Length: 314
Length: 183
Image 1 (cartoon, rainbow over the protein chains, first blue to last red):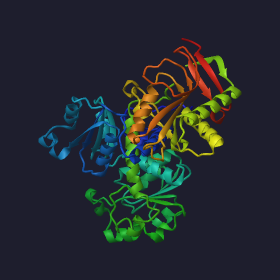
Image 2: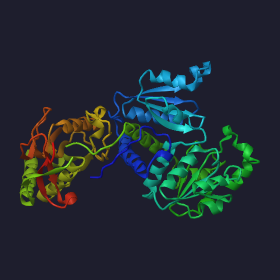
Image 3: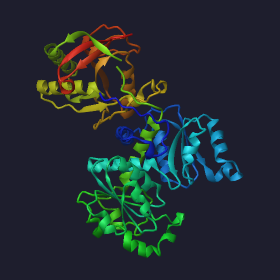
Image 4: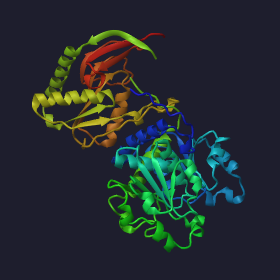
């Protein structure tokens, strides 16, 4: 039997994972998918462990996905809501985390608008830290659930052409996905207006296109990104209408990809901005499968983050 | 841990006869054979279960549903490990409600795996009965668990390991007792 090890104490980004780590997470996630199809959606694997959801940015889907994942593994979960917390009263991030740690949690899931904040936590925290999105930096569980979805639909994670379309500059989802597919040896093309897709990204090993038709041609996977108005994305192009005309995915453009191609979106989608309604609801769209797989991937990460894996029993 | 072969307990012929007897015993005890479902415990138990499934098909010409059970998430020692054991797939695509479950593993030892398997099964429904089949019973039970059907009782020392090998995965059919080279 194959010996597997997962030696990470934290999940800060895809950057720190080896290909073997990624494969271990995905295999574990596949095993956890079944739990969510049971009548009793609960297993005792993390009984007695405490998980803290520490979200400093608004998030419904990622936070509830982690919450469901923790609960299906029988962990106890505390949701820490930054808008009603002492941070508003002037407490520093470090003091907040130290206070939470005094309650002896095992895992802290953090989302913060400052890139690198999860790394900062590891310099003093005793718990395992999971990055649920830090600034413009990384969102590793999103890239992992995307990878699981691709693997399910296309039966492989290798030798693929991945096109990512939209606001690459502000997207931690894009960055994590670029790093992951770089590690898997896949071909990556990035598409968007020059203001949102700086040529810098070519240094990460991706090709940059300003013409969506060229960028998605022959792609196995097309990932659309949301126009993030809250990050001021609108200041980077003249109008939503122009953006839609140039960079939205519709039937016509999707037909340039491979026949077997799938359409992904990390959500929330803006219908008829970056994605045509018909395409969002089409058979090629895996947007809802991504959400379902998110729970399994997060269960796997929560489960694995206690150190190494070894083969078992008898 | 390095280990070497201490003894070869069974060869292909012996195993074949033992499987046949196990199949016959299971059928003898379960008059309503159609109510049975087979569940193999990951990983070796699944292969033993497939053999029994095949046998019952040959003997009675019935296709029994076969499920795969991974008990990792129900282990009682998860909090003790520094390393998390690998989780494998569970796949039981049929209802176990009111069925007679033949729970199958290659070796029964402390009984803790079976305890975990039963907890896991009862999350899925309420079977009419659970009957345990172990190809080898090597003693040293720590739980009040006793196989209903056993291929062979094999007294062993705790530091030894019983290795049930099957053609499908190990290339040949045999049962070995392994012992550590250093201890």
